[in-house]
Image 1: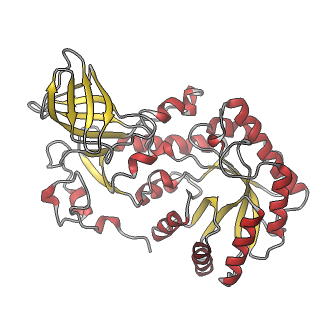
Image 2: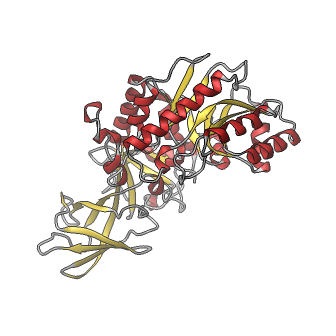
Image 3: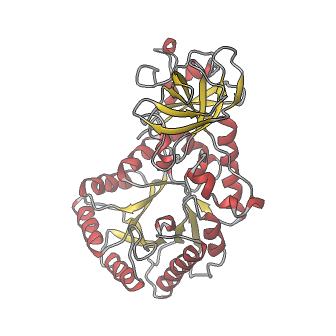
Amino acid sequence: MPTDLSEERVDHRFKGLPPDAEGLTVGELAAQRRDLFTGGFTTPVLALSAESVEHNLRLLETYAERHGLAFAPHGKTSMAPQLFDRQLAHGAWGITAAVPHQVRVYRAHGVDRIFLANEVVDAVALRWLAAELDANPAFHLICYVDSVRGVELMDEALREAGARRPLDVVVELGAGEAGRTGVRTEAECEAVADAVAATDRLRLVGVAGYEATMPQADAARVREWLHRLVGLAVAFDKAGRFAPDLPEVVVSAGGSEWFDTVAEVFADVPELSRPVLKLLRSGAYVSHDDGQYRERTPFNRVPEEGALQPAFRLWSQVVSRPTPAQAFTNAGKRDAAHDLHLPEAQVVRDGRTGELRAAEGITVTALSDQHIWLATEPGADVEVGDWVGMGLSHPCTSFDKWQLIPLVTADGTVVDYVRTFF
């Protein structure tokens, strides 16, 4: 049974939360509807916009429906079962994982359909997967294969585990000769498919890949690769490589940068011997951001389809103003994503009056472990005690620094807390 996250006790594990909430359950604290700024929260504290999260969930739901896509958003972005539940409620086919540990988290919280976008050759993990599949007929998992050796290791581990249900696999087509994982040529894909066919513990159900790791990716290169992926599915179907009892063929791609091109190419998938599940896996949309995906979202290319809203805001407090050109807040690398872009100072909450104003003339220039360095232009209105609200880049490395994240409405009311499991 899924864990009831509302029953977890609030304590020292969860940074930023009110010290006087110690011992309350998360549900009890949420019911108090505290104000983020006056309700006892300490800085730094990461907040998620309730309105933006809901907007983003609805937008990708309608986008997938409009383009005839099934949707398995990548859960490694948030590792938050509450958000998984909402994604599934907004029409998601299932949730994507990257490693077996993530699958264990998903299963502990009741996710029944999982797309594991990686080849699994760890015998211990495969034994666990076999036991989980055998014990739960409703559990459906698909994972990658991208090598003959990997197929051999998977089959061996599953046979030794006495697996009764075959493990469904898709051949991963690498995105470019110098890309990340995945088989590089169609001939090699056929060899991997033949290796799967020679086992009795694996079942080939489709093809998949991830276009965003392609070096120098652009629309033309991504489109060309997607046509190769679709062509591989067509060739496998024509050659009878899919199991006779297979109800549908899976064709899957699509991160958060090229799903418009995925939708375009997948719209023209030819008719096969059985229905095709066109599975999109974008994950960063749930929170969006103020950096990487603000710059690269496909909605910049197709604005008529809508626009995602950044949901993160990191609040930290100015603790030092040593010179007119410098200020320092009490957040740092342990609190803010910094692998792709530095945080972006957006708004200041006045420490004296509580009023909000734009963070004009304030720029983040560096992060220490527990300090954010601010360069302040002449006349920049910021002093010790003020709170600075910052936008973040890269959701995957923003969520993972916080175990319990306040979900906040536009008026500052904390309506819930999102629990993460990294």
